[in-house]
Length: 108
Image (cartoon, rainbow, N blue to C red):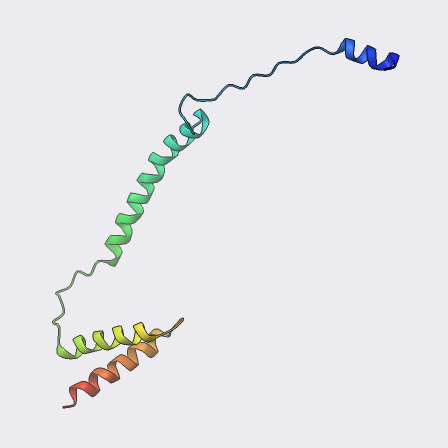
């Protein structure tokens, strides 16, 4: 050891660090809990209002349509066509093909 090293070691003060948890609860901190509690109430109200507005837009207010045998067959054919398809499909093409199948079945 040289003279410089002894001087550095003498001047060093022992440092003690202690870690204290932010909260007594496991896995939480005061900052996170505060932020989530205040924003959750506001977000929940916004989401509820948005959901009510969306539901009101989609609601059909007219009289119910009667279920004909053609509509029933179109639905069944569309179900089968969608089940056998792989990947993205065109709505118009599926609808047209389902109507063709329904018309074919009603020919008898």
